[in-house]
Length: 165
Image 1 (tube, rainbow, N blue to C red):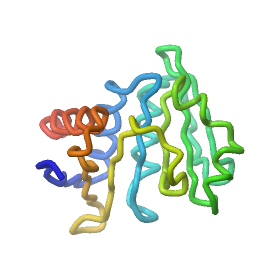
Image 2 (image 1 turned 45 degrees about the vertical axis):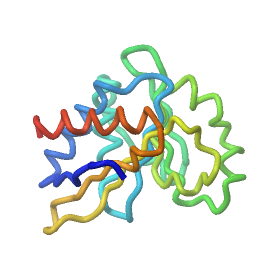
Image 3 (image 1 turned 90 degrees about the horizontal axis):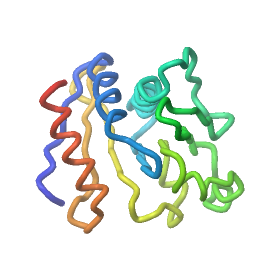
Image 4 (image 1 turned 60 degrees about the vertical axis):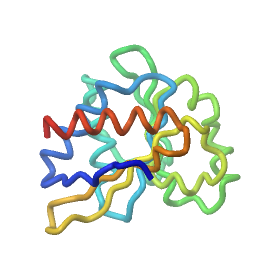
């Protein structure tokens, strides 16, 4: 793994700030996979990104039961928030019809491991875990030594965002 230092997110405000910073970089065709245990902040980060991309949205529900929640970004592309926690096999993902969204929308995917083998190589991976106290989280970028230029791009974005958080 490249030298990607884990980043400490001290509280909810910092997580929301990070989401807004990431939103300013995301575009149609970007896939951001959010990994981590229940309660680690995947939905919180996704909501902050969606709120920034889709400024006129008041309510951003978790797609835990609907599986997919689409939004329209101010920039004119769709943002798909996927929560795959309840899926049991990659075949169920195909039934959601998300293949086109990978190329035409910005996709925020919680529990991406449920899609084993179906994600495009350009997907970016972000790992969240619990921090040293109840409000903090640890954020890590996936392996940037794989040749995935999108993953390297994400690492750069996060390094820039860390200066502001």
